[in-house]
Amino acid sequence: MTPFTLRMRRHWWLAMTVLVTTICLVSAFAAEKKPNVIFILTDDQGWADAKFAGHPYVKTPNLDRFASQSTWFKQFYVAATVCSPSRCAFMTSHYPARHLVHGHFATHEQNAARSMPDWLDPKVPTITRLLQQAGYTTGHFGKWHLGGGDGAPEPGAYGINKHVTIVSNGPQLREKNAKPEPHWWGKSTGIIMDHAIEFLRENKEKPFYLNVWTLLPHATLDPTPEQLAVYDGLEPRADDPAFGPWMKKYAGTAKDLKSQMRVFCASLTDLDTQVGRLLAALDELGLADNTIVFYSSDNGPEDYNIGNAANAGVGNTGPLRARKRSMYEGGVRTFGLLRWPGRVAAGRVDDTSVIGAVDWLPTVCKQAGVALPADLRPDGEDVSDIWLGKSRPRHKPLHWEWLFRVWGDDYTPPMLAVRDGPWKLFVNHDGSGAQLYNIPKDIGEERNVAAGHPDVAKDLTAKALAWQKSLPPSKARETAAATGKPVDTPRQPKAKGKSQGKAAPDRTTMFKGKDTNKDGKLTLEEYLHKFPDEAEGRRRFPTFDTNKDGVLSEEEFVTMGKR
Image (cartoon, rainbow, N blue to C red; front, side, top):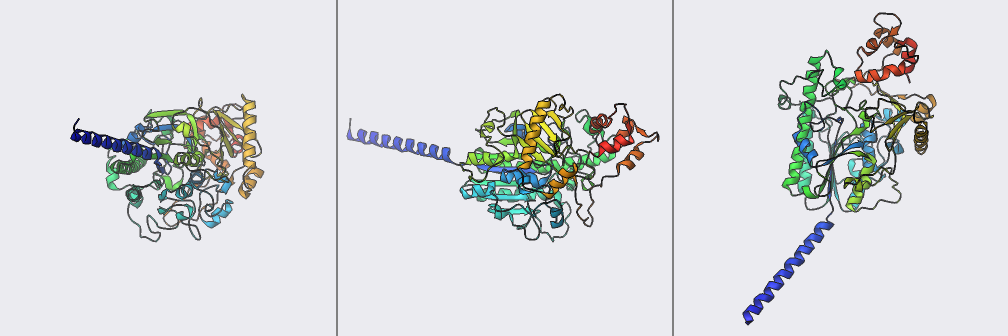
């Protein structure tokens, strides 16, 4: 072998050694690289408000594609029936009642009347602060609603590096004193995504956590003419079998339904378009494969009876019972779409695992390699194994509390709820009024089986009462517990040009209005007249008919209706 040949062989081995070493180092770096996280939270989007979820009219091509790349956890639950407490749980891993966040943050006077603080305590550990302390750059764009107004901290006080928000203090999506701008609400999702995409470009070389919390499809919807044009000629049918009883509430109001559904679908489709922009930016920047993207809504869809929701109250809960402000499934069960290429199965539908908003913080921290502080004591649990494909029961039950009566809301169960295994129980603070449902077998919560399963009802009642006793004292809870009835929600002063939700009418007056033949009794047909949800009305009628004679007396209607 010549000296030249020996030199060439040495050079070849040296080159191969460098190449192998480089590959190993790159592989090791890739294995250790922390995942990015994006949390997309919409506002008042129903469990079936997407094409992939069964909506017969709406066009959501980007969400449909995203669902095909994700695992859909169909039993995903938020921790509250309205926005602020729901968001509190995602941020803290605690049930919102632990922080006295019983309802949405409003004026200081309303907050005090609900026994609430004026904002979430910034000293509370949050997912953004924990990740920020671990080297993540954190961002939040869109709705905040964890406290605003005089004295409220900006989102940055909660461990957020960059934020442009609304219903908050600090940099705003739209200045609070800005002149009215036509269709701004309809354009808002695009504005939020502009900020989010800029954040991605600025932080593509380092781990990041990003909240993208939209304003849509919360009322009042105001799509642009271009957004509406997508649905020119839409003709919803009140007898459409795809909706079943949900649509029948609109029978005889096809004109109104057409207008409402067109506005609603146009708004959702633009939201879908803007989500598509965000996902495309991840692809363009080469970030998609190392980014966890989670998509959900803060609670169920709005009810068309609420005054400012006349064009947003057609959200679809599919087979689920009730809507926003209710602890029945339609109010607290929302989308749970999770995409993480190569780690979370694509196109998988998991309809058995029960996951909650309180699980978000401990699970993300686990995947990011962030240890939880000893004093955090999360109410949720690490469900990383479920994310990655394991099927198992929860280790901890899920709990809810809703203390308030809502104007025009016909979906009020007892004030405590617990989900444990297949069972979901509702009960009052004194242990009365138990309702028990086997959710996998009765997704619509139509059959109260408490009488047939007394041991289950007793066990879950004990768990619900023990949980509520672990909560900090609250005047609102004391009042509700003492009376056995939800507390009246203090009404916000009516702003100029804004409509209010309807005050619940006197039930004696309601009875006389429904009793068209003035015989002192209501038939099922009379009871259902102008009832907002026929399916709900048919569920309620036999529960009001205590003597089982097939009609309702005034006493039955008034007494049972106040429970």
